[in-house]
Image 1 (cartoon, rainbow, N blue to C red):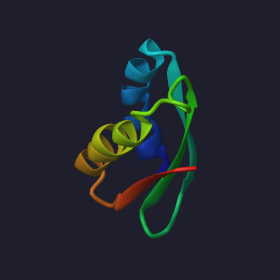
Image 2: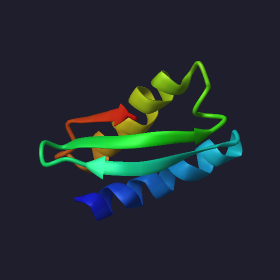
Image 3: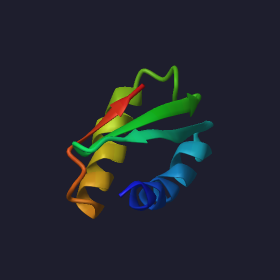
Length: 73
């Protein structure tokens, strides 16, 4: 599942990079929790929680049903 998560994150990455940010995959747990670290301008952005839940988590769940949630670390 980790490789599939990486593929989806590659689809999201250009949008984040356009705003001066990025995302790093930290871990995919057995329970389907994806842990990511927002980088660059995304790390301190007040909208980062919304990016995490409405952007990254939504897309991952759509493409990989085994994903239960996404957490920022």
